[in-house]
Image 1 (cartoon, rainbow, N blue to C red):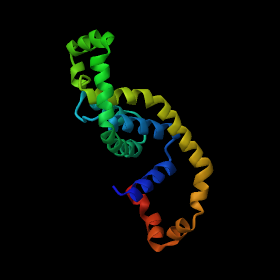
Image 2 (image 1 turned 90 degrees about the vertical axis):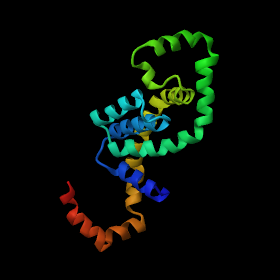
Image 3 (image 1 turned 60 degrees about the vertical axis):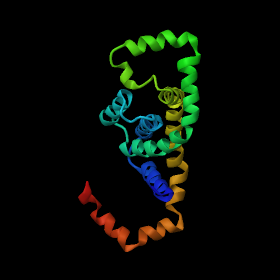
Image 4 (image 1 turned 135 degrees about the vertical axis):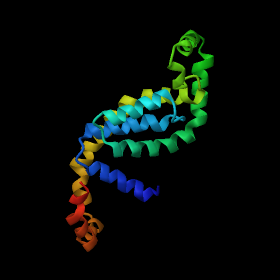
Length: 175
């Protein structure tokens, strides 16, 4: 996806009718999915189930997934180092890891993979701050910046075009 398209989709999400909580919830679930190196794990299937069940903004979840997948790929060496330290170097946690590995279904989360453990640790640390920051960002954007964006010359020019006016007349057909 081109950066311009990404910014355009992000602005559409911010201007949507979804509440800031729905947008922030979708963002953090997409964040969790994007930070995980393996899409086919029990934990990721649980997150996908949450995305389907909860009343969150799906577009935000997909946007965050795309954004953080690229970021997580770049951070894999750091995640590996952190995961290795947690799984191997911290002696007090060895009994916990052994217990979890011998528990039914828990090994399907792939927690014993160093990259998975490192990315999951960072994701869990950032989860709540990211939720509240995203929620606050949406509120600030809607209060302060959305009116300014609507008054930009190129936005007014786009809205005055015949293609946009035809879209406005026909958009109810897609609902």
